[in-house]
Length: 119
Image (cartoon, rainbow, N blue to C red; front, side):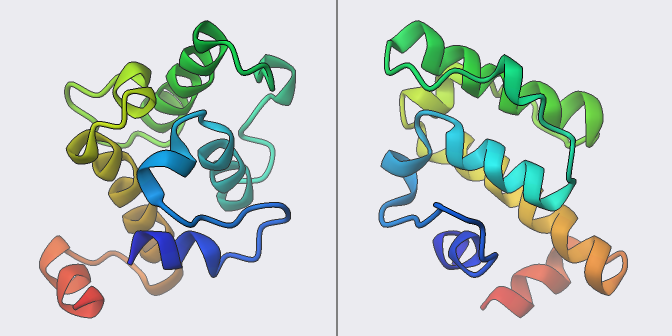
């Protein structure tokens, strides 16, 4: 569902085949964030280098934006969790983004309503 949700956004140069692998460098998540809230990402802080330290910085930036600017509830989630492909914690990030997206479009809903819609 999350893969299809990201792909349905029509974001330029974004297509997810396998969620955990494709989100590991943070770039797609940053593009999703910027699409969701234009201007929220300072692209000067983002690195396209494939060195692990730069990838971790990108993913830390994703988590920082989610927590600080979007006020997402991400307890115990760090950028390293996305880089390492932690399924549970990566899904937590994407779930929060998806939930905020739908809250903004259809009004505040509870998680039960969203899960029922997703199913």
